[in-house]
Length: 433
Ligand SMILES: Cc1ncc(COP(=O)(O)O)c(C=O)c1O
Image (cartoon, rainbow, N blue to C red):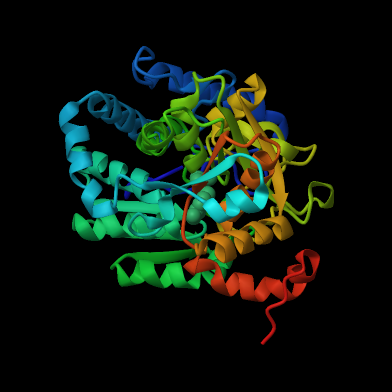
């Protein structure tokens, strides 16, 4: 679930213990299917015009939310339908691109390309946008939408803190009250971003329940319909720019596009404009943590199964009883047990491929980009760097792979310093001083 307005509760329908909440009542696993059918019936009755955009991506997506949320979700859907094809809205959105640093940069990573010895590696530099990640695209769009709907107060959730920082940034700019929910563990490991949010005038509320990470604060890209579609529409600027910029610089489409996956917003934004270009390989990189066989990871697409989490049917990490599993990743923004439903549909259709990269491999991606390109990435895109290097190595010279550097690394410097004694020896990196 993404940005919400004040009158909505933040919890999705799935409680951490796997029961389902409907109208305040807990339902056990056995009752789940019936409860979910009831909820779907409600969506069908109250949802927007199905001609405009679908609530589902094949069998994925939908809106498994309590009835008390349905009125707000319908209002949001209707509002989004209105602005979706409204040139004035998009002109207003673009009028702030100068403020957020768009168009973003796309350039060749020449030293990395030479080191790898395969395809050209290009970097889409979302780390250079204000205030440091792709999250600003959806935060800006959603705040403009909320303003159109007459809302004056914003609540949002965040994992690595970048969505929180982006939301607090636009709230400061538009003079809106802002409250950010953040897992207590993420407050600890992303202390810099937590303080940035406060400096921007927003309130941070640590979520103490459950694993105290993103799972309990809910990821941005997932959530009931229409959130996944809204986030996609605001993030496709990534792929659209990439397509135009590579055409300009190389006169062709890329052969591969690579992005990391937490909830999936930068991946969906990068991939969507290439959906009907079958020559372009799309690869999403998930957090493999300690390795898929170790059970300590956050790879919902590569290591999960179909289920319902935070209002959406998608691939999730769950046990055989449907209880959501604890996740682990070196990177707070990827540390999540679910994924946006549209990516789940592309996994099943085969349009996109997904791999899992371990903490140690991500650290190697982080090291390579820092030392060879002078760019310290966030730990989330460090996963994509590792995966993109692997893809480029298996391609021919003259082919082109674009990797999305979804955010900058300042927030992760302390985490890297803390993890180096454990992971450094695995990749031959020793920075003791
Ligand atoms: C820099 C950065 N990249 C990627 C992500 C993962 O999110 P998503 O998969 O929605 O792009 C996050 C999440 O916090 C992030 O901060």
